[in-house]
Image 1 (cartoon, rainbow, N blue to C red):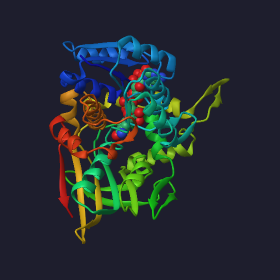
Image 2: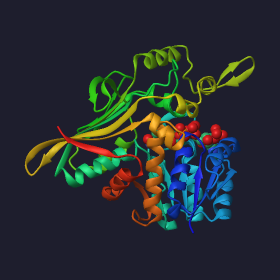
Image 3: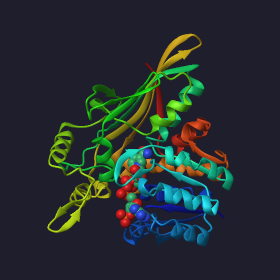
Image 4: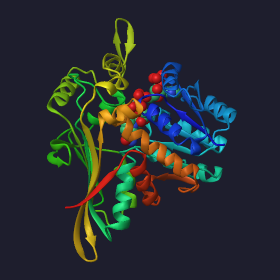
Length: 392
Ligand code: NDP
């Protein structure tokens, strides 16, 4: 029987644990480890009959991770802690020769910059250890990369442009809250925008480029250009690509709150002195904001995330839209998490399932679009994230 180690018991960790339990013929014994035991206990109480053990681990400490992986003889590590822990967990996987999967690329806590460089650099060590590391197996990155690979395989000879379109039309009733870890979320959306065209990265001011897109089953929404990590690997792997952009929807209220918080310095990630004590404004803000996990029972509405690809097939121009719609309330009814965590956790489970089954298999560090997309697309349909394709 296999042993699966899940690290991180947040919103995404809850979904991954529920979904691995639903597929326990593949995942076998599941060990959920996180910084604090409270969330692990909550998740365990939701799954009383499961072959699920819980424990604590400090995922910043490679030695502690090595000890845990060896103790439980993990066959795979699913990292759904924070992007800050990617490297320590990857290093523990290299040392113990254990396959690794994550959903977000490495960020240093003191610098709001994310890139694959340090993770890709571990490719040789993974190859030497004879194991696979799968990067970014969430929704975006993750499913969006698989959508691009599927479009490339079945619909185009050459893809010229890709727009990744991420809409969350959920309403949680709070004036301001983030749907996943506030620190990671606010760092991402307050950064400069960036897109790739004709071989170059072009930087924009935060929220400078806006378009209105009509999202199926949701309607028209203001969508803003952001930098998003999957573009870094897609420009390497999609043939003939001339431009790739990423857009995310934001409502007026969210943007006004964010601007105000930014103007008063609450999005700062450098420590400031307060009453003789150092505090990091963004971390303090995280303490004040609603816990994303608490949004689950109160969020209504849908998400729609997809890609629009344009290019050439058999000498003719073609444009297609591949997208997935999830309903916050339905996700909560199934796994006690809203759709943002659900749409991340399900692909993490699917990636790990394909790895454990040996269907996605290679030594080294890989991004999602480097594997055959068909198996993943089939799993999406059966594991709770059915998708659609439209010719535009
Ligand atoms: P949460 O903040 O809800 O959960 C993170 C969990 O990791 C918490 O349980 C936290 O423990 C635990 N953790 C943090 N630091 C450590 C540590 N040093 N050691 C052990 N455990 C630790 O985040 P989410 O669940 O929302 O997000 C999880 C991951 O998913 C993030 O990396 C995020 O960027 C990514 N993500 C990816 C998306 C995609 O589509 N690809 C979309 C959304 C998220 P504690 O409870 O003690 O704080």
